[in-house]
Length: 172
Ligand SMILES: [Zn+2]
Image 1 (tube, rainbow, N blue to C red):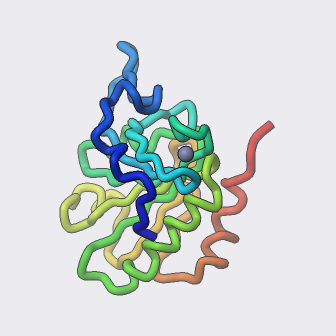
Image 2 (cartoon, rainbow, N blue to C red; image 1 turned 120 degrees about the horizontal axis):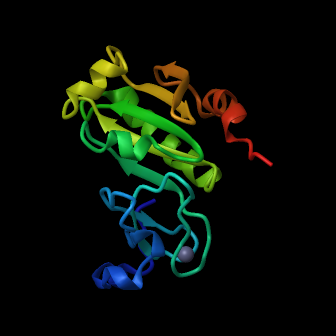
């Protein structure tokens, strides 16, 4: 899971990376996340993009989109043209550790159709309150800026996939 075929790419300049790293004046840049391409191992620095989905700057494959958000960056990260799965978690939470790799698998299975936004509730109490995350893990599904589903607890991957499926469908 943590194998890095090409760790030397981390030292490359931002200019050599994805075009999504190039902020335009009418769009706030937002925090960069490093997404590793499962195809070629390249590390891509990707900023929030509400119109598209990230692709590998090296091989062009859709990247599994998993980012971490905070109370201050969440609004920007949650704006997306694809379904957003928010994972409200904490380091001390055992079931969260069960769910976490599952969400990374889903991001990989549905690259280009899903964005996973991880929120540490201990560090981001405002979001924990907004989403009423009294029990974790709590997973919130957001589509077009609206909360469309909510899953509480460590559910099996198949169950979570079924819940997500209506929001993963491509639109024509
Ligand atoms: Zn690649």
